[in-house]
Length: 160
Length: 287
Image (cartoon, rainbow over all chains, first blue to last red):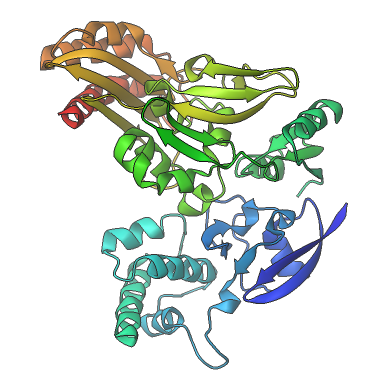
């Protein structure tokens, strides 16, 4: 059974024609062509597929595409403020070497964006709690935390 | 993913009819954080899912001083977790909510879904039972209200008949001088199923415990009350010796099994440790 789903992805109105049993993750990757969102475990354990739906981060693998009807979805492709401009988090991740194989990075970036949007000056504990649903098997997290703290400072400086 | 058909219900009656008429292998679909995993890992054979998220009136959260907190079937774990009211008046439930899965999971998973899944290790069940919660059940012929402590009949099993749908849960208000605690014991802090979970809700009257409920998670076929331990504590000042003997009694009352997460002996020992700790924590919170 196929169905047309209308939603907003990264600020643009889109249609997806999907099987009703298709996950939002598969729809984003295979139908919309946004392959920045990664499929790690496909059962909600790893956080690689984290996208922001109506302002809240969710595992795109644990949501059916049909459930996104009318929703606003933000993926890592929407993080850049403009062509050739990086989000402060992306810039900080590059400078701090916070990405090794990179598979977890899109999910962690989306989670970190939500964290800093809600809490511009997070403590170490806030960052650990905020990223507790995202697994990185390369970095040991230290450089990820450094990058997020650095981005938080830059974003605060840019606002003042 | 194994294929299945999706049905979006617009009313409770329609959802209930679909659940009975579509035959076996038809399941109610709410947050989906458990069901989609079970489908993908082929743990459950599913031909049809009936989505209740389009049904109006199931997303409300209300509170008043006499009735307490009522939340609908569609209220997510994350939404309840972020509510100041829950943090202030139901800190035990709040701790359980904040320890379930991850932030991403909590933004999809519903509290009612966690309860209806009827896992003995479900985090939200012990504090809700310790607080004396009720569950509201719709069927096409009548509505019924069941104490949550009587809702479960085994692991993954409840009193729900085919076509019945849980519409919400009511948690009575905390009285004056009440104290609550939920302690989850696991191998790690995040993305963890509890090895043992202990919830205690108590009321103190002039330094004497007038009422107490102890609920034990992951140490039986369902979340269990510990009535004999509670009886030892009621009417006492909850001094250290009484708390110790009640904690020992709770160890006798639980019926843990050994599995991949812990042995039965370890679980029983932890019931003793955590029951004592949770009573002390609830007592401190009541002051």
